[in-house]
Image 1 (tube, rainbow, N blue to C red):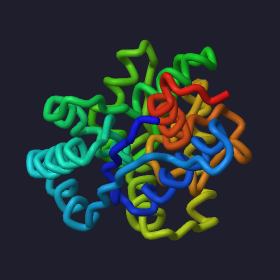
Image 2 (cartoon, one colour):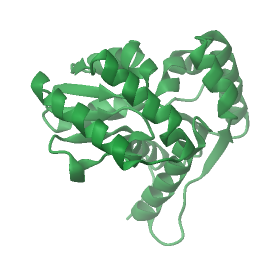
Image 3 (cartoon, rainbow, N blue to C red):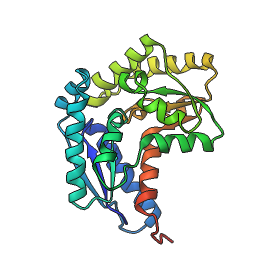
Length: 234
């Protein structure tokens, strides 16, 4: 099994989910007492969130590049960013290390295309929905990507940072998110991408008719594929 290096803590809630799902995935595939070989560097999210708010992306890149290099020196054979938003810095990290970065956008696009879907709505933080780093990556795979209207984007961003990132899951926010999804039906989308690692705490396939593509789950599956490539799991 390859050892994966995880850049986490953005938020720790999502990193906790990654850790659980990754270990569950490895155990399911290998059985017995097997679990994931991983090294996690969990940051203090408050300074990173401030960098995001102030658009200090150069400073944020420098920080995450340093972490990625340390993970590589510590024995990691691949790098994972356990945050969709911080994939904005993926290219800088890829250029700074000699080991592969398993990109969440590639995992999402492959799953969407396997479903025969080509027009999807992307939900996530304001940065993910309004900047081009994720839509560009998805469009490189031939997908058509739309995002919610401005007031809806502000709502989703608020719910993520003020509620989900601090472990609050509110029925009122779930209802408002479902209203956004219902309006997206008017855009003739064929699927909904949960493009934030915390969003599946709020909505899932059981309560939405359109196909849901959970970025966290799909990313973890792609990571496990990488870790077990060449391993006999029979």
